[in-house]
Length: 209
Image (cartoon, rainbow, N blue to C red; front, side):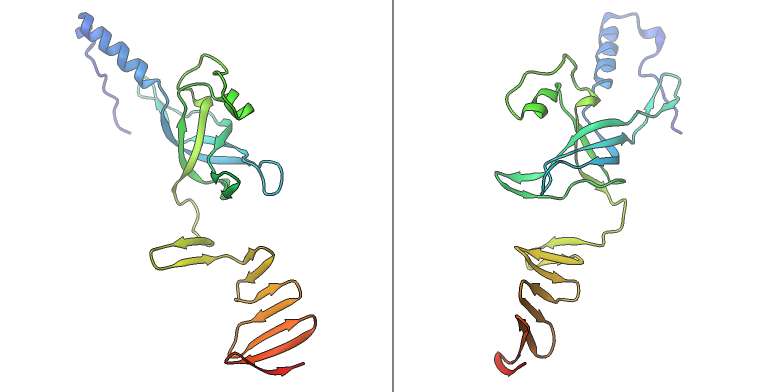
């Protein structure tokens, strides 16, 4: 462990300037701004699709006391988290247990805003407090990525067991299934509608069963 070296020699703390600087540094050190955390529980919002819920997170950077001893911070319960949303359109990719991400700490008590969703005064006099933490996004891959949506300048790639587009499902084998309609991948295109199978070759129907 790295040895903690005091910022000041005690014998030097005889000047007002150094006392003031020490006081300022101590106050700044106790201000919470941002920190890496681990998600230990997820509380989903209500409805379908779900509204924004909350998470319980464990801060991962320990604090160091004046003797150099490490102390772990406690779990922060019921923290808000971010979701990409514009009006009634949203990308729902909520945190999962064991995610490791960045959390920011608001400079005032945000409980009133979270409760009302409107202009609100601070719920208390606390400032830069870990109770007003907001989970942002992952900064460390705690699990191997198996399902993903990848966007590049030349590609939009989606890898999921099933993809549902307005009721039309594409499974992992490339089979498209819709109400009363099924189309299969293959050398020839086969479409089943209400129990009747149409086979197409080069865009021409070659058989009907």
